[in-house]
Image (cartoon, rainbow, N blue to C red; front, side):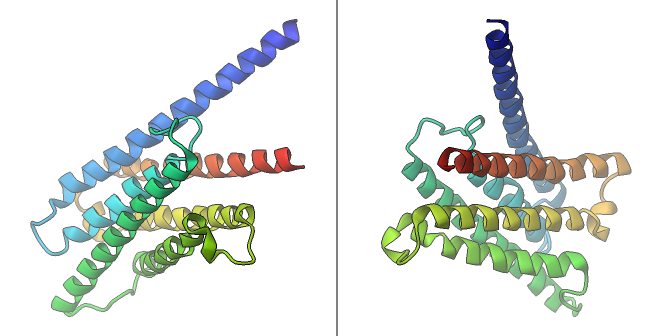
Length: 224
């Protein structure tokens, strides 16, 4: 009897912790993106579109696309899984569009100012991330159109997609963190604001890693 109450209390604490973590991630990704909008003032220059579009792509759209499948923090938790999948793909499509736009903005800006391209870790990782997120979105097509997945089980495709998607998300967060080390950002904020800004993609990455790993660990336990 006592053990049952303890288990119920632990389960309640677990659900509460996961719900708070998911809610915090929603707040962080929105706050980070809004702050970058305020700081970059998109439209004020060609360069301003780069931080705005990249933060919109990887901080907001990609985070929200993954959180759709969170059992504790999804804003559409009661929707069918198929509907979640289509909305996820739409958000990822917007993410790719914004990422390509952000990459084009910085590339053209460097061209106009006769500066070399992709000479920093931020630039190189950003280029790799944009290419990977594009491929990741295309590779997800068989999950929606199952006729394309000939010879592959849907369960295996989902596992591969989740694993590669997590790697892609971590690349995006790393690109954002490296972007915070740029001369433009460090020259625009105080050290206190810098650390607060860096916490946003770092904490979001931890929550998303936990969500994906727990989801597929639980599925393996059910299948075994």
